[in-house]
Image (cartoon, rainbow, N blue to C red; front, side):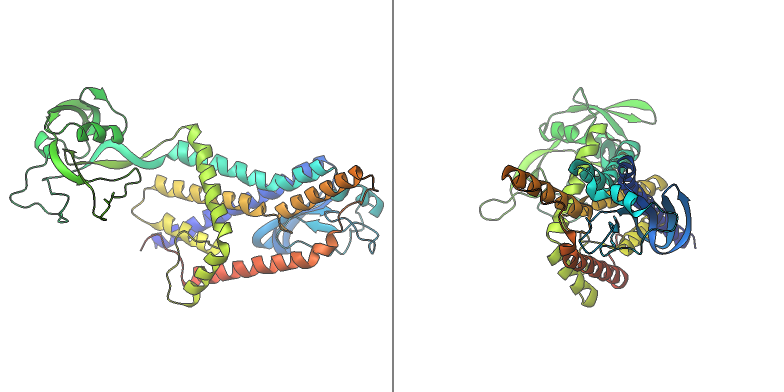
Length: 443
């Protein structure tokens, strides 16, 4: 029963966090648009029937029944066509009203006033600021959340605390895990090193990372090495003599090196027989931006290879294939993973919270990258259209021609509908796959 409650709690945390992220994304559009004087009729979280709303000034703020996004409705996001007497209201949401709206209410500003306060009348840089405001807000949220995870909770890393001590020395060419009667005693166990000891110094050198501990040991075979460990709050001096042992050579990534014949390369190094305990280690502020950047690169790679990944998802959804754990997910899949993390007993409360915060950080990175795709009705599509319009006007001025005016976006409506249909179909496929063949972190 407790696991079910925790599972639901994990889903709820991510769902609420996602809705807050969407609301802040739309606020990123709303705030600069208001500052630049654009007429905004609605600021809504969700879609479908309105559950609750309140009007402040010209804008109606509210929450709708389907919590799958949100939008800001601005006048003149698309310049009016000759067939229309007033600018159309379109939204920043996924289901953009690209055709038009039923018109302002009785208490709304006049058509002339709305036209003067239309998005398309703004200078190019202001339009770009408004449309980039949403994705940039998601990026800022991701940076803050990554800072919370990395600097507040830390990340699992090898520590200088001893996690395991081997009882004997097993040659690298053998795969057995148990000691034989004729196996020599491991130097670490013989020296009295115990699991839980925190290594303070090796060979007279203070150490604060496991890499340095192993480096000194590997280069000191058959020579006594002084080791000081902290045990029960006291410093305990020990002496260990690393055994000259054969081990498979590996590269920086930990992969075993092979010779020209394809055989593992064997090297002779000092061996003690101790392993590091994995602990959460807090990172410095300099680790935050590289972590966000790595996530951005990962999302870009997924988008670039999305057609093939969707084929793989379809094969897994309608066939026996396994889901790629690094493949795309829908909100259903994300919620399921959040529930699993919250309910698993092997993780501490801190690790569960850190994982859920990390999920929200990754979701915001995905929203940031996804919305920059230069296709309407996404934010990147509006930016691309604005840049095209600006370049066209500069070219006409350079050629001494009459200003061509705003781009007629109505010509792009069919393509926009196609994009919406594709994105909607993709979402339905991922949701179905996440229901019938979900990605599971814990089996």
